[in-house]
Length: 486
Image 1: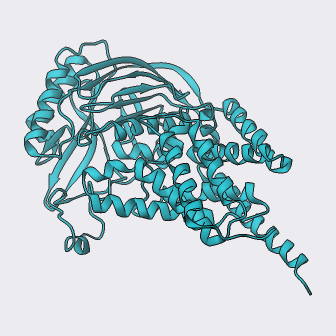
Image 2: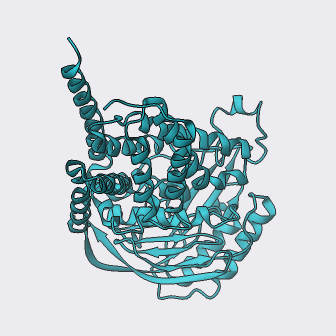
Image 3: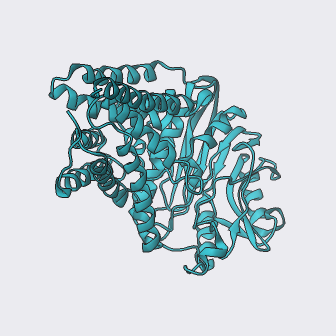
């Protein structure tokens, strides 16, 4: 059987529908079973279709999933959001082109979809992992498999189930083997090492000041956010080991140690006899530092971590000299200074892995923290500029994914939510309400040891996916060469 050409409507509509199903599997909806169904629809539509048709169908699927999954971008720039959706849809279309039209389709389709996501997570500008299928699958039964291969393995399992289900219905037994492979991966993930408890615990207070949402970072609102954090911290009492404030609620024109805000946080540490970690922005000429700063129970600054993964067009503008001619950059007048090194604060409360906001979507930041000795993960974040729950819910999903990948407890603090506590199995024990003032108190365990994912990262998933795609195409060409007329 050779590839065929179909009318556009017969390709676009199923592809778009598949993409919408994938999008609805993501937070805030989180209907995770829709992802395997979406991949099944897409896989079935690509069967026997020529390369132009495969490109068109998967591009339409990309419009469906990213048009919804990245909709939050439209709050800040509609042209930017459109360009981002088109770019990410093109990545998915490349995955369609990498899938053979007739034979050897299952392993190639799984490999192609996995490679597409791996590339999207890294390029351009370091990648934009929001809107990715793994953020929905962490809430399903495949979640423990993140210990093996992170989000890429969760995506691969969804694709295996979707494609394998189609093959089973069509009684193609070889392709249907994808289903038991998916089951084996889930079971292996559940049995994989996820570290072990040290026997020590942290008594932690997460402070959420509350307030309005959907604003850009105006100076007056920054001052009000700080005042709300101070007011919310007044009733906080010991015994505690750690007090966690959100990202970017302390905005100062110089070194925070020399400011009244720094004195306030020093006093809070002394009053509670606890380590205090707070998100601090320090201005410098032509830029700013986005930091997590730790005060000891004695009131002294003992550690700083500077955000490494900056938000493109949010905390810095790539190609600023060019972009300024075609866009209004008044909302980002200066660029954040990129940090470096492992994501860790070394404090009297212990070695604290620290992922500042956007960094929670990047597994390599969490892996760097664990390799540096982190026994718990902290996520000081600030999603107050988003008016909907889309980014905050995806952020909690990212936190769950990082907790499972690393085998660590995780505590997240946000000024208007969501603040949350997540255990090493990815279960959310406590989550605040958006916009409300809240102090979450919890006891979290300190853990050591490494999961397979901490040790190996995405390399096994990317290597196997590359081999699957290359091997299938080699088999297709070899077979075509064997049956070609002399």
